[in-house]
Length: 152
Figure 1 (cartoon, rainbow, N blue to C red):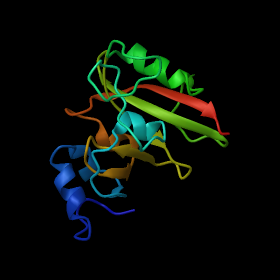
Figure 2 (cartoon, rainbow, N blue to C red):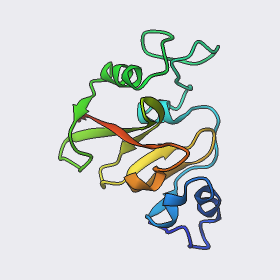
Figure 3 (tube, one colour):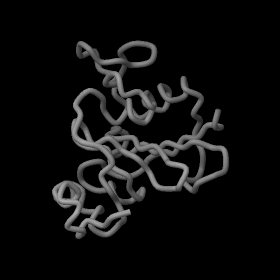
């Protein structure tokens, strides 16, 4: 996995301006920019549409529009079989999500990969593979809850 200072990763260097934690953790860009889906959809492994609980046109949310709260994000992922768990550590045959928030306001969700790193869609920007702490900071807050489900 590349580091921010790696000249082969100029896109990652640009992202580190918004996410300073990427400068001190390992990360790499894994896709080009794509506005067709967002972090919520990416975490749910859906690259066909954007997810969000608001009533804005064209956005998907399990169960229809709702409040944009941490509790609602947890509820939405529970429809996919996820439940709160106590640790972001990798577990055999378990898929995990981490929801970042500023207090009770959810801002981002990342999905754990089998290698123990995490994958995130950065808005309409690139997907990246990263360490969990790499995105903590002013943009996304900190990890508020980790969810897990058995692998299918």
